Length: 626
Picture (cartoon, rainbow, N blue to C red):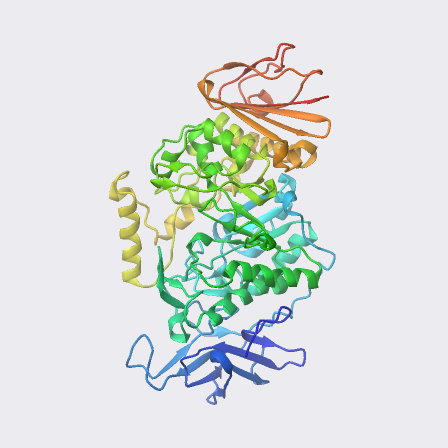
């Protein structure tokens, strides 16, 4: 029986110190499997092992050799019943040099000279996350170009970059969620060696690296998994069709596949954290949930390596079983994105309450998210037409990632408009302040910090004409009630992709530069002020001043207390804040001329507690308290 080895990859092609290779393949329906290397006319015959695995140790394959598997089935049994033999790339390929339809390229994971031995990782509470898409972050759109921007990110104050999915996808343009080789690093981004180089460079500069991975579905083009074994099950369905088989017959090989994948990113690429996409779409009713099994394996690796490895999930369920520790019946995930904070924040800022925004009442729900993380923790949800969620009791602030925008919330709009084109300059500063004053982990999306106005639209580069037509039709249908069909950007067009690239020339101009300076200041406050840096949710109290469209957020730490007053209305507001024994000192006024704002008056709180706050702005005061 082949079992997961925490310290060594036991799937695909792997090289030993003596130069030989061990090759493992899970293909239970096969009657014979062989490996073909380069243009050799002699197949390397694999040996059948227990539980559907095939194995070969050989010195006849070297790093950078091209190879593929030849799989035979006595009764056909392939997608095309007429087939008796298939030639396929490795489902655990590390490098698809010629794309999803080409042969696999052998890669030696141990060949890179790492220089980050002293790096043990960051505590989650110290993460200030910068989410980026490799293809659109820079003009060249590759890992090497990201390296050229690391000093910029450090200067901004970022502590962790988050890479949108980099698993091999069709063509050279894709968000990454259509990947079909979860182990292979996208060829047009530079491949596996370039990724190792990037991570090593990040650690050298003190930056953590988060990688977005997709364990809930495979993309449609170049997807050969059904030919190898029962990777899918009709027992469950997902928005993308049949679910990945985590709990039906043959699930052991599928589970091992994804556990191996998670371990590889940490162990062999030195990734610091994984962001697991849409885990609510993972269907698993087995004895141990696959997320919990991944956590157990990652925890063993972390202990053996003496490193910090984090698992953060995207989760459309207000269910803290996912983030509760395993010894308390949870799956042990270290954190989760909470879209509800975003939804409440955006409705507070004037977003029309359509679709899933209909569940949110603006400042009242924003205050609740500050207090409780989840907005819906058992109440009736009008959008879902049912009671939804449960309280996040006992879960620290460092377990929640919040944002005012991200790739989904921008790109899932038909036109991909960024927030900078939807709200005022003053509101942009307020939204940023609302995120960085929260007792949660802040995330910003690339270009947000200088109010990038180029959109981030949905783009693909499929080769299958029917698939392209289906995607185009689906995008038009999704937004038919809001836009004319001719307004829909063509996802297949290279123009759509290029239009989504950042324009770095804007950074040094006008309001763009003012906002960048403001973000730097906010992040510096977040990192250096002990109240903002403390993510203890017990030291937080938020109150909605609904009649004024304001939120009064109070936070404290040891002998200091802070007030963050946020005015989401377009009117100046007069309000009263609690009076304390010592004077309040102003820490931040987003409306100040220092940040290209409209006011130059120094804001103060009177002895009676009166304060005037400008429209669409945030004020932060601090004082000692008894």
